[in-house]
Length: 388
Image (cartoon, rainbow, N blue to C red; front, side, top):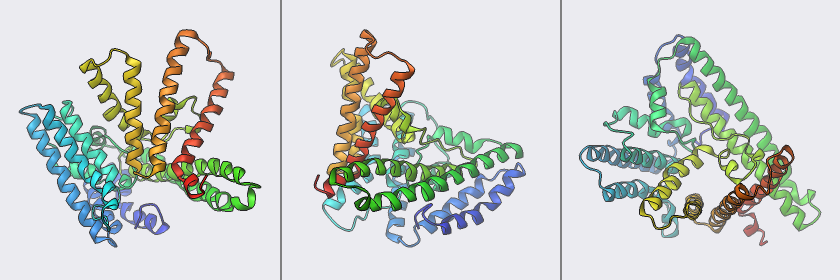
């Protein structure tokens, strides 16, 4: 069963989370019960795919051993080579999952949520390296963080220290009441976005373009904008479901979208679109690369370092989505946009060519919107299917 894909799934959650709501409104702790619920829901999700369930179990054991082992090692030493090996070992199952279909079928490493679970495991190793995590993590909390079912399939990607803070929080009945209210509101937003607006765009507009568009070019243009809006409402709807259920379980999972189509530039867009993913890549790829390049002093030009960081970041993000040509092009496209905008931004700081006024802000939003939509057109692979 795929999370949030049917009303049956929501009906099961209503039954399972009823005790959570009752305990929460009474100001009593419910996290131990929620851990049990997580195991039950995961069993339901993977019930029809025992091979995927086994892959998930083996993956989780692998990540836990790596994390706990590296935490124990970090107390004694801090070798860069050991850290690099630990990170590569954490990413290894995801790499195998991405590459295996090109060499063999079936993909025995495939299971729902492998990417987002890998992000969590790798993040813990990196934060241990940075000294943010110093003590062995309680096994139950670590497993709960990695396998937290509301966000398992597509995020949002949480951070352990923030998650653990919510886990330890003592909520009063009134505090939980507000959390429940916010969670239910997000669920209703999810239904509006995914099952009403997103479905309508896909079913009534995109599926009927052959009747709406008068020529091939117009069909591609309509598809580009239609797909961009569909992708947003479908994914934002899913995220609203995941965050809403998290709230009901007492965990304030981070937001994933913040009005991305009113972004003023491409940097602003990546601070608004799939925020938990873009912030993860920013913190654990881009910032580390910039720090490493600065430390090695291979160049003193900060703009060159920054631009190289953007290229690395978006190429990795493209490859993460898949090795198909549309994802590689999507990564290259956004890398070029970021490099071009970064160059323009530095130029504008010196020459004040583009003033910050209400008019230029509106123009910036319109221009950025079209660049974003073309990126989603590349991402969709529709141009390959249609031979454009």
